[in-house]
Image (tube, rainbow, N blue to C red):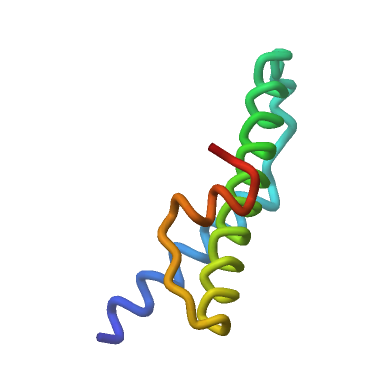
Length: 80
């Protein structure tokens, strides 16, 4: 057991040393990469919004005492 902990400690120490002595890469990031990152961020925000809305309606229906399926929730939120 001690051998595996020492192994992970050595790995962490080497990683930290390598990260502190690294040099600039002078790499080029093309404009398509920025578009990719923006699309990923917008998609993540949309997924959080959809999930929040879905669980909000489930939580609300729990207190109302009604059982609503997905089509009723979409109709209440204005979707088809």
